[in-house]
Image 1 (tube, rainbow, N blue to C red):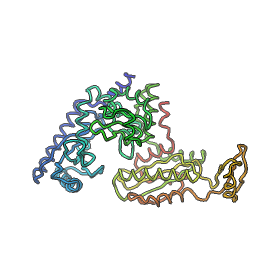
Image 2 (image 1 turned 90 degrees about the horizontal axis):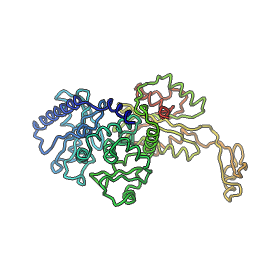
Image 3 (image 1 turned 180 degrees about the vertical axis):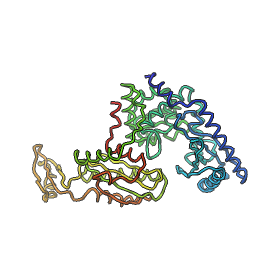
Image 4 (image 1 turned 120 degrees about the vertical axis):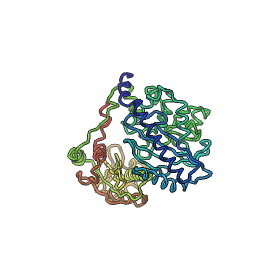
Length: 464
């Protein structure tokens, strides 16, 4: 196994030259920002380097420079950070010849590019301890300091291996879109278990909604810890804040996927787990997939297309996830078997699409009632006397019937959307998919790759 991991490491570990360029780039932006702020008389702030570059846990070909500017909360307000900071810092960079993008997390921040590196300039408050934070990002300097103090030199490469592993399997990132493992969580797991291999081995013993990893021992036992975070699938106590779960974003789906991958890798270590798939399917490939699914296998697909009206990614994804859950639950309650649902949004945040997969969409359903000897059997008979066939008693002694469905799945989906009324999304169309032309809303490569994933879902095959 170690031979495989060392080979992977040679491809993802940055050399000293890259590190030097990154620090040089950070210093350049430090000077630009400080000069701008000095010219307009800004005081009581500190420009700092945070994130994976500061902790030396970044991957060679996947790195951002995170510059956090820490402001004195007694002199600056949240409103100032959200408005004035953005305007001042954006103008500063534009005047220095840089293009600027405004991105959103817990509050807005400024993004620019230099030497092909993405530079994130994030405002935060300088607080004396984590318990006094005002915004979520105020914890970041404490996280950085903790990791720099606790993470051993060799452990940095173990972090890189785990990060890369998670990225390739779409499990990396705590944002709502992904609901996976954050970079900080990865670092904490390596601090707890010392290596990539040990993390995988220990993960096999994790139990959903029962496991608590408490590095600093804030809680007396696992039971006390779990009681506080009973709704989280995995708990990793934040060493700088005993009241925070660093794994709170992790979904049950991704928790389960990670444990499965860990077991597969440990049973049969292979470079295949670390292979990137750069292939872009053609429209024709996806078109054939759709035809196979709808005609040969008889599955039913419904597409929901939206215009995006408020361009804040976390809000959009939060609303899409809520829509997905509501549609899945409602369709299942109405007798349709929703087997899969997923969403995609374009890079410019103008269009969103969800695709719903149903086991079948026929106008008739096979309804199973109570045992014929049950007191409720009479109610079932009366409710279903207008069935196309039946009711009758089957070989298992239960009442059953075949009846015409009262509603089409498209109508159910429309009702769900009307009830939720998502503020960031405007419904354009709901329709059944019969060909690729029903879903082609973008020419982005990531879109056609996503379509293949929706209609194929065979990513595990390469490691089985």
